[in-house]
Image (cartoon, rainbow, N blue to C red; front, side, top):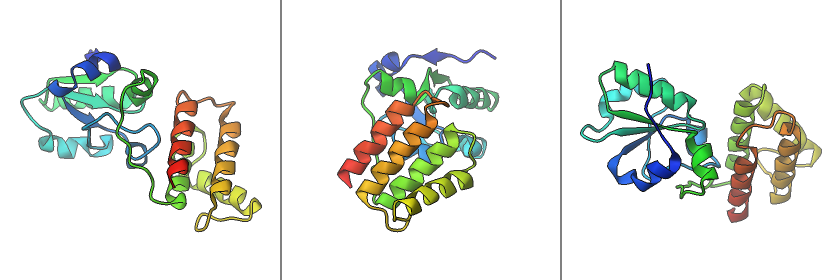
Length: 188
């Protein structure tokens, strides 16, 4: 099945024509890449069960981190008879790289920021969520801090540690996500 795609620039220019559906996980939707303005959050795992909640009468622009899961979502919705559907080529990574506006939901605490960073670390590395959390906890202990009571300086050190650890993995959103985490840290 061929999925119709649109570039971030084209999508931004025509954003009012679409109902935007973001199929990423919760930590991504709230995470450092932000989201396409006006996006409705329907994680891919729940999409089939929630398909009837999606608006009719407008094309659905499906969005994820890189364009892979949203392409899968386009295929699923087409099979379910929903559409038309269009995939955002390159996902929120490409959207951010194009310098397009995003909506952000900053974490409300340093602990929440660390939790989002741990979930992202697990997503982009071979670590499980539990292992990423344990690794961050271990690093925090070495800094005299904990998940429950981190300092700004400890969180900055954790972000430096994560950046260094991921240089070999080099996820495509490394610089974008770390910049987003640091932006959130600055407002806390």
